[in-house]
Image (tube, rainbow, N blue to C red; front, side):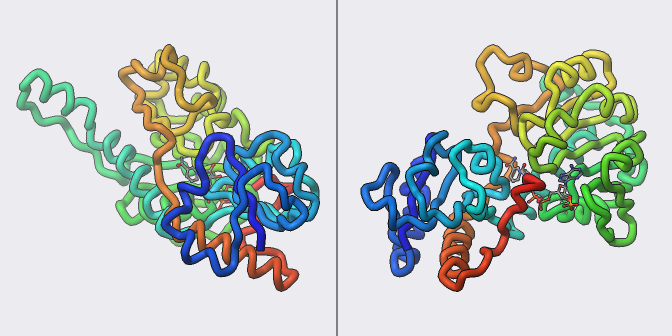
Length: 310
Ligand code: NDP
């Protein structure tokens, strides 16, 4: 099956290099724009060019190389009826959970205070707080959010989760859903973790109204998508002390512009959209499973719901 590689920001052929031999039997990769456009039924895409999909009239599916497919979904040339597929890999959710817990425990245990004390060669114990006294709210209870919720609960944090639809949650995790459940999910939480996909409903969700509901001195762990966060509201909440700190991995503009106030903010830790990686073998498996489903005339596994937007 012919598969076109579509990205303005990544060398997808180089990215897939270690798996090309395994894929070669089933998939013929072609670079965009390609001469045999009519042969192309599959695309692998990440930040595709705006007109990228328009050249391939027989395209049936487009695979993302990550858990999110938003850069494909917002591409104006993506036709209705093309299946958009994302990668779902348990090891990625595990890695994401580790990233989130790293920041959460840093907040719980006073990591910035120890850093400062060490710089001043100060030997001073600080009062420690038990996990049970630090309520955590996780926005998004999907592949990533559910893993993080279980790991927080295992460490003794009271956990609330928020999803779009009602979801059963294991014992010890309080589940809320829909717009109406958001306030209850975040009310009085000290740590809020954003693991939502970017959709019209979730854009800008991390704003002053949400921050005001948190416990004073709360900590934000933002690993969804940059456009979830109202950056001005975040800076204001940090300035007022409503937020004690924020771990920010994703930004409206990436790379984060050199003059952005987040870079130097003492309460902010910036990471370069690096919370977790999907493995290249998992991407290759997704491409193969998608091609096999298309050959059987079936909907590929992990096809996103284009109406819901994730
Ligand atoms: P899933 O699709 O598995 O889960 C999404 C969750 O968000 C679901 O629980 C869903 O609810 C919930 N949700 C979606 N829309 C709404 C809404 N309007 N209101 C309330 N809840 C909503 O996604 P993943 O867990 O795999 O990934 C989540 C996101 O994490 C990705 O879309 C991406 O943005 C981000 N991510 C970031 C990475 C990084 O490196 N920073 C790496 C990987 C992912 P329901 O259960 O009802 O469907």
